[in-house]
Figure 1 (cartoon, rainbow, N blue to C red):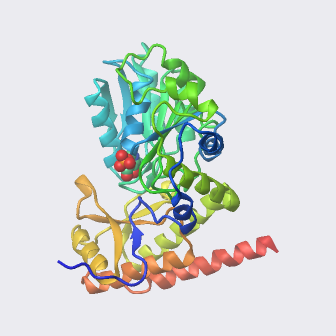
Figure 2 (cartoon, rainbow, N blue to C red; figure 1 turned 90 degrees about the vertical axis):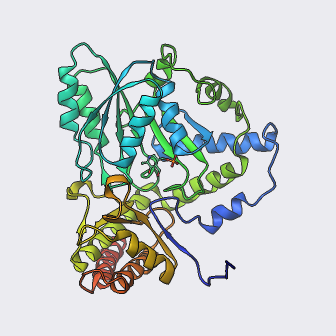
Length: 399
Ligand code: PLP
């Protein structure tokens, strides 16, 4: 088929990869430089220091050319040994994939069952650790923002539960879809390894992934016996302070990251998080006005990054997404594995403002109508009311 030009920008409203702002695109649109030369060195030092502020850590952050899955693997192979038991929590599709990866590496896993409508339950993790008096469990792994459900795990509470149980297990956290969108504090929450990716809140294309470390995680390398080479931290940690990498870094993505860190700081991380919360609240107001249901069942755990919406008849989400793509040139997230066709996911993370949200919700509301999904009109109106309201409150605060 002949591909014909579609006027206007495609709306990429899946929960990552996200829309890459022009400033990041322009920053990457440069000749590739010598990654062993002084110009690169200067830029890399700036990026390796700057990225720490985004994880809210003073510790090293290792940057890989690789997708988030690679950084999941890196977190495990640098800290654990074959046959070690890891405690994981079934928040949804991505927690399940991380568990599968751990098993393929030769780890033993224990999965605390979840209903895919809540974040991880810190109390349940604490109970399990208390029962583990022999300290057989070597690590606790949780997904901060479960991208398949739109539920956020209170990581600070998980830390408290581990401490209250007096358990020495490492805490490994996936923040792939929350970093730079939902408040995340590596140091304050005592996380040992945080796993991140470039393609969501950092507003970059896919292709970089991250491990933020703790002193305990760095020390764990000495006893960790899982085989590792590409993902090993040791050479990264040895060379990074000088602005260099053991293998060829993704030079142009790092230029983009340099710009993205600068942009997040210009806006202010607190403002970035508040912007996402406000857009999430407006999205939920739209969903409620449509008479539809948000998948995440705990209002305290609603994600600022995405909202997953249940289809009223329990099916038809894929047909709805197809209509919206064909008619309005907007991509929405699909339901994954056991949620396939049952939900659609609205991504409202990354480079995003009030009018992008209204465009997104307008596309959804028109799609519901065109696809013949039972709903009430007025979702966009309800979202606009939330935005106008909270905008006014902010203006008053500033005055
Ligand atoms: N973890 C979470 C929470 C994710 O959302 C994703 C991807 O969407 C992954 C892990 C896997 O990352 P990647 O697809 O970049 O390998």
